[in-house]
Image (cartoon, rainbow, N blue to C red; front, side, top):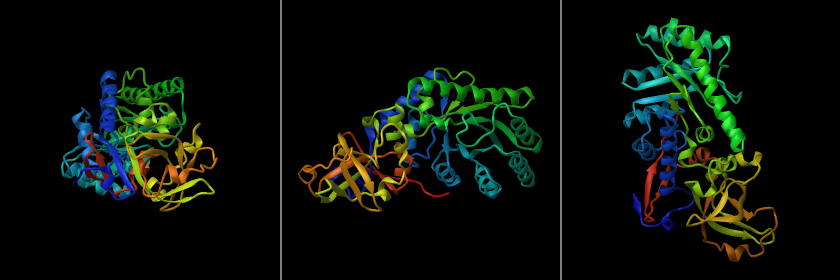
Length: 380
């Protein structure tokens, strides 16, 4: 479906600025190329075939997914090399087996010795050998095993002796989202690299294969000075960027390629508010910038042309109503004149993955102002 102008869209609508997105894609691909590693993008950010095809065209190799449904949909669309980067559980073994038996080169991950044993048993029962990577904890942020732990070797042994294929190790420095200085990001990028390489070396010292060393978060990917010993880089949100990433310091608000188009539907003059038709059902409830040095509320307000309007935020949100006000709480007595009813605006999101997930499709805004519709994948 093609439209001639953004102003033809019903609101709220998720808008992708295609030229900005293409610059973001090129930037990360160039970074991976310079560091001498392959780029396996995490497609959970967009869940959009049109976008992932553009990442592949730029040089990406394989994809990372967050659900097996994503794996099914992208495999059906022609992407066979897939990493399912969420710890596998026994209730998903059959779904993973079905994909692999259809020809999908699906890699699974675990940080649990019992699961490693169980997947070997399941594989033997079905005459199949799964490829499994071990998740390494490099920063205490979420999942994974410490690179120097006995558990790492226990999992490796369970995979190798249990009938599975130990394909590699991976880490994700999620705590990078909490940083905001170049020095801190560089230091964490090195911790992420060295932790994962150390884990791989310990497994290889046991005589076990560990061909892949996979790391990645958008901030560390853009901050790493060396990726010696690493084979691939995973990152996801870079394709759009967002306000959390702007606060971290790896982009500017002007680089954010995803926005939500909204329309002014009323005012609260005494409070200095404009009311728009995009609330948390459009922006999501993610307030990731609230804990950072600069709080963007529910999003940064921009003109319909995408120009950042300094000092104006989506400061509050109900389900279908958003509150637009001046940052800092001082009422804007001219809000109705500045933003009359019917005015269209674009709101930059705190967290692009969460905001994108609120919509069944993106409206891709080309350099010529034309609009194309790109569907998103859904489900688990």
